[in-house]
Length: 536
Image (cartoon, rainbow, N blue to C red; front, side, top):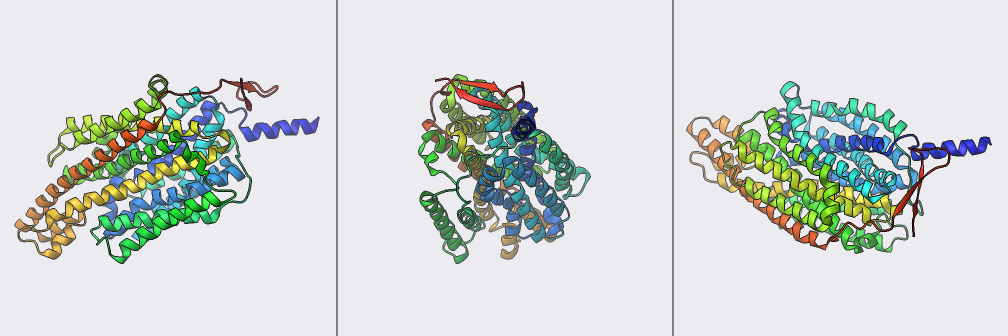
C-alpha cells in the first residue's frame, strides 16, 4: 500500500498535480517576460552606456547583440537537455544563472565586462525559453485551449520586447544604467521557489546521447554569419579577410550542422519536421516577424531620443501603444485563428505590419505624435497577429513527443530573428547614414569619419568642434539619420511582404484532428495529472 501511495505522490509531483494549468501558464509567461524584456531593455540605455563605458562602434553592437545571439545559439542544446533531465529542472537552473549574470552586468565597469555578462545572460535565457513552450505544450493537449494559451504566451513575448524600452526609460530617469539589470534579481528570487512549487516536471525522448558537437557547430556557424554581417554594416570591404572569412566559415558550419543532423543516429533536431510545409513556413515567419520588431525598435528608440530629443522615459511612453496593441491582438488571437485560419491570419498580419512600416516613413526631423501613434499601433497589432498564428501552427504541427525539439526550434527562430534584425537593419542604417556626413563644410575628413559611426558620436564631435562647423555637422547628422531611417523602413517593408508571400503555404483552416478527451487521474480530481485519449 505504501508503495502505491509513494508512486502516486511521485506522479503528482512530476506532472505538477494541484497546479491548475492556467496558473502554470501565468508562471511560464512571467518567465518568458523576463527574458523578452532583457532583449530590449538596454536599447534606451545605449546613450548612457556609451557615455559611461565609451565602447567602440563594434563593442556597442556586441553589447546589444550578444545576448540574443548567445541565447539563439544554445537554445537547441538546452531544449534537448530539458527533454532528458527535466524541463523544469533546466528552467530553474536558468533562473539562477540569469540572476547572477544580471548582477554582473549591473556592476560592469568596462565594455568587455558588460559584453561577457550579457553573454552569460544569453546562456540563462537559453535555459529558460524552450522550457516555457514545451511545458505549455504538455499541460494544454487540446488544440482549442492551447491556441488561447499560445495567444497569451505570444502576447507576453511581444509585450516583453516592447515594454523593455519603457521600463529602461523609467529606470534611467531615476537611477544609473545598471539598474536595468538589477531589476531581474528580485524577480528571479521569487520565480525560483514559485516555479519549484507550481511548475510540472516533464521529459521528452531520451534515446541516445546528446549531440554536443552538433550544438557547438550550430553556435559557431551563427556567430560567424552575424559577425560578418556586422562588419559589412560597419562599412568594411566585403572582400576583406575579417568580413569574408567569418561569413564563409559560418555558412559552412551551418551546412555541416544540417548534414550532421541528417546522418546522426540521435540528432538534436529532427529535420523531418521541416519537410512539413506548415512547420517550416511557421519558423520562417517567426524569424521575419522578430527581425522587423526588434531591429525597428532599436532604431526607433534612437530616433526618439537623439533626433526628437525625448527623455528615456518619454521614449518608452511613445513606444507604449505598440505594447497595448500587441496585447489586444494576442487576447483575440485564438478566436480569430478559428474563424479565418492560419494562412489568412499570418498573411494579413504581415501585410498590416508592412503598411505600418511604410506609414512610418513619413517621420522626419520634427515630432509628429499622431503619425507615431498610428504607426506603432498598426505595428504592434500586425506583428502579434503574425507571431501568434505562426507559433500556434508550428507547435501544433510537431508531434507531441517532439515538443521539446519543436519549442527549441521556435525559440531559436525568435531569438535569431531578433539578433539578426539588430545586425541587419543596423547595418542598412549605418550604410545609408554615413555617406550624408562625407562633405560637411568646415569639418575635416577625420571628424566626418568619426561622426559617420553613429548619431551619438556625431553629436560628440559636433560639441567638440563648436561654432558654425559643429552646428552644421549636428544638423547634417540629424538629416542623415532620418534618411537612413527611411531606407531601413523600406527594406523592412520588403522583408515583411516576403513574409506575407511565404505565409501562403500555411493551411487554410485550423485543423484540430481527432477529438481529445482529457481524463483525470484516479482519485485526484481537477488539476491532477491527466492522460489524453484520442477518440477514434
